[in-house]
Image 1 (tube, rainbow, N blue to C red):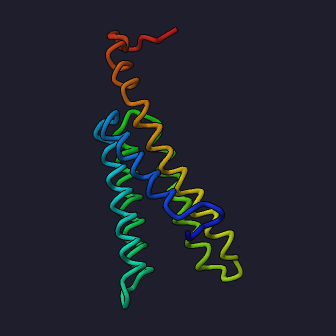
Image 2 (image 1 turned 90 degrees about the horizontal axis):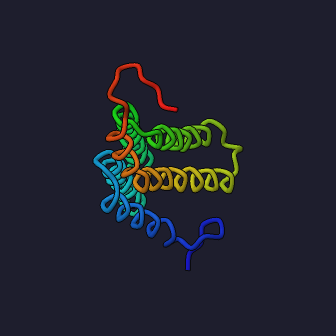
Length: 152
């Protein structure tokens, strides 16, 4: 079985599948949009790496930038906090890739480890947002009606 930094290679796809099921079950439209955006970017990346004679690096860059744009859009629209973390983790993944391109001395182990960490943290932040989504619906119902009122 192939391994990446000690984890079997099937762990990340199973994590994405679990996040997708959780988003469909408990999440709202923003959680589902982020989940399907993440699944789409992951699928494009897998296809780009397996297809011969394609500009893999550019295809992956477009997929990552598209996912970042979606996550930023979700962060600007959603009342929840999780999209800010999700967009931040994905931005760190893109910056890690750019750092590898700028500094060829960066070791492969450090680069791959960072990408794995950012990928899991992105998926976990979407999962936490999906799990907590009903709490946000309940908070909207119980919000004070008076303008300028504060909670205690």
